[in-house]
Length: 274
Image (cartoon, rainbow, N blue to C red; front, top):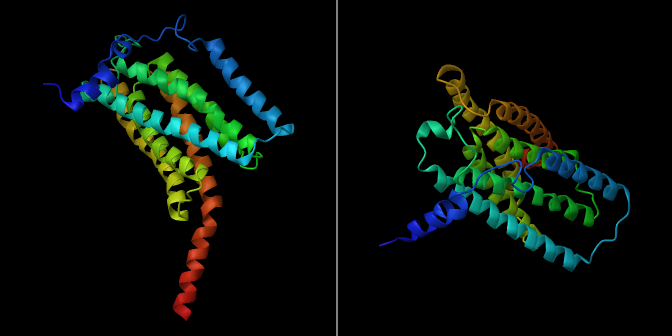
């Protein structure tokens, strides 16, 4: 008798659409290098243009409605990707979670299906920037634009180079985005999180970069000392990109939340002198 878990596993890992998926630059939508370059350049160009030119803003109620729907979609999609990739990884030997066998790994099957969905989701996340611009653009930062453009290239390289750490990176990033879009959804609905929980969202994002470097040590060991792994070119970009994001997020964290620490310290000092 089938259990609820069996049904869930079939829908997220064993469905024919998932098991028969194959990444093919000549056939899979948005898989060619020109389409990648055009997507990123179009995003950067439109972001700059809409940031410089005044654009009419929709009514606050309409903007909140659209933002809530957008954040809900990404929350549910992130949760589904994390769960789907996790279930698809259960059948892998533990070594293959860190190191795909060189020369014998084909970009097909459940793991690459979820990696492709992840890549498409990053294209959809460009709407994040549009929502910021429609709300006045005051929250638009270099970190935001750099992150959104770079992560599309990163996720494309996961597929194109068969990056070995893709399953762990996907589950980690999608799980972090569940937290992040939960916060965004609550904000768009007018439910404000306490400052400490808001700060936690940034700290969870920082933690994922630290975790990625730890996982990279395992990948590098297998690659250089135990037979090699697929996706070294993709890993090199991923490592440099993550390092740059870690520095930018640490800088953002210091500027955004340093004042809270100083305020809390002053409150404690005041209480001690009373």
